Image 1 (spheres, helix red, strand yellow):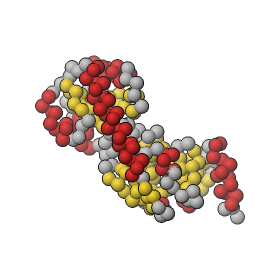
Image 2: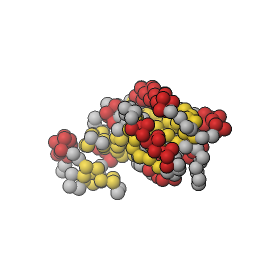
Image 3: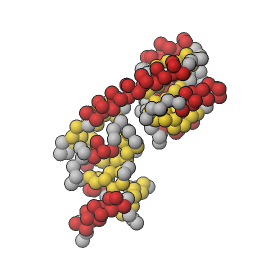
Image 4: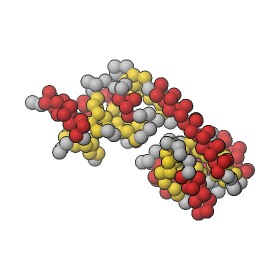
Length: 238
């Protein structure tokens, strides 16, 4: 399913999109918003794959909102104004729905997004390449080289991963599964300690009550991985 949000300052228009999403089997509505500022705050910690976005809104238009998104999901504009279509497609919008639109039109646009995202996921899995010291990973329309000794830990968020690096305040967000990334990491340096976390064993400084501490972040060691993690500790305990 595609993680989705809807943004529209008109209550009836927003409710229509919500109802359309609810009857579409491959869409999951994570949240809805009546203004883009609240949506931007939500997206900073909750990545999604698709946004149904109105254009003409106070404070920040849908066009402006799209331009400043750091990790841009697929966008389907929903608007009553045809004049924005060209500008929308310049921003590589997946589709442009002109209000009032039917469920048939909505479904066609959603299926287009599903197909594009599916192809990108396949491509992303093929773009994670690694050797003994580093890997290449696709993020924000670029492919980045990441040295293993820069990684503190990796967090999995459904179809995304966040790679937290030693000297960067923001994580690298990539459209990948934690499982596929785990397969590319050397077992001698990295260990999965939770269904949502992989840690760099060489970066562990403090452990407290079955939790690994990275600054203000506490990563739990779940029961499934405790035995393996304890074995690592026993082998390195003086």
